[in-house]
Image (cartoon, rainbow, N blue to C red; front, top):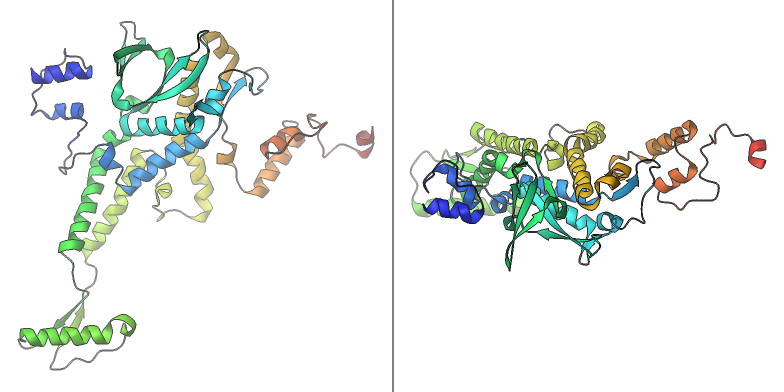
Length: 392
């Protein structure tokens, strides 16, 4: 009965099987997901794992930094004069620019499964601004025909909003990587805790001095004091002389310690798989080389970012464009800077596009962030144009 009330308050259906507060299926309702290691994983403690923090920041910040533009389908021209262009390219509202909103909503989706922003309109239905919604204050529901709508908790109570007025970004499958990879994240947290306790309570000496006969406590203190005085600090590495048959035995890294270090690398790789990111981008460089770095960047775009950018393009179009406008225009992220290679390769590519008649001089100048010049819109091949033709 208590669980039924909780589920009703949270907006969940009560027609599901009965659960008690001791069932493990009830934990997600409270934002807690237990694991086999006994560590409960949620957005807050998961972000304390460096690999998770790096993955979330890398995806959200990269998507936020890529500019979005509105294009005409027929001419491929940028529609800067359209009233919604400002919301995707410049500012989402007076205190949040468009880039920051994409970062925030992508981060919400990675940590909670989905991110939302409420669209407000003017009296003539023109989109005016986006405002981010806290993940805990919004719930997605569906009409009998499958049309989604949203329940938003406000100071005045719960409000219902159409899917056309809520910008929604969702991870694949609707389940956050934090929940899908909770076992791997919990194991990484366990490793961190274990190592911290070892260093705090189980510190081991680097060398052991063995004696053939028992020594008094005073004699042990004298030997240790002399050893530190003679072989620490600037004296490290100097030869040692031991009397009365004593031996110095260094303690090397055990096989278990070596396996522990390798296990920590495995956890970074597992977390990289959870977020669908090349492990080298999370700092695991054991298999990365300078020669494959460019390929890793391309892999990051194709495998990780492209689905997110497609989702963002459709989310913008769903909220900001009418069905008639969607047939004539579309949103798209500008990924040129992300996929740019070295300067020489870029110059070669631009030169080939110019000779093929694909790009004009002004197109190339725009790609280099330079102003257009007069007569630069022609698609003639500059490598075959004669001096006579230029004079004419």
